[in-house]
Image (cartoon, rainbow, N blue to C red):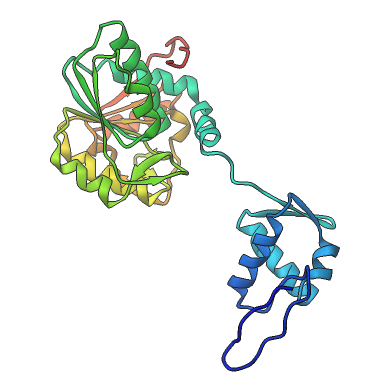
Length: 294
């Protein structure tokens, strides 16, 4: 027997064993429904109708909302409960997108890094490949004494090896699982205490008209906080992002000292960007594939 308290001064009826209490506000009702659904992976809709203390139409409306929010998938006669994809798998998916191009960008960006540099690397997958290249160079002694500041959990784990001549600093802040990185006021407030020789960032899209753009206000806030803290700013964006204008605008391409992309960018677009005064650098087309750093 599941029993609920009073609403106002009116006594409420008890709900029979095994039945769903659907009498609250829509948000609370859907929350209770989702909690019930999560008890197993699949449900028959006819069973839910039989157990729900509401109309079949209301139940279907609530299921439709839960489906739009990504919690469930409705198919003919049944409901499948969807689990949140593991953060690591989501990040691995991002790393796999345009991986060869990102590695070429990373190899070109590495040419600008000198021993003793103080760097900021953002939490983009492109900057992960730059950190990977930096670790390889540091492990062979080609680059040493470099300080890496980042908000990326994956870059921290990659660079924080005791046998490497690297100093690694985390920004701190609120952890964002979907981005696997630290953001928020605490992260942004830590940055003005430092000065960077070079800042490397990326974005979700770029164009001459809109500049560098992103889809996340977390990313936007951090990039705008870190960019003024260095005299040398680098934007690493592969050509698949060219012409994609996302909702949130980081800044003009001219705001970066160097924009690095790959040779697959449209030639007319490439020339227009350069004519607008942007220092656009193309990564080498024949940069060999590299294995992930261990």
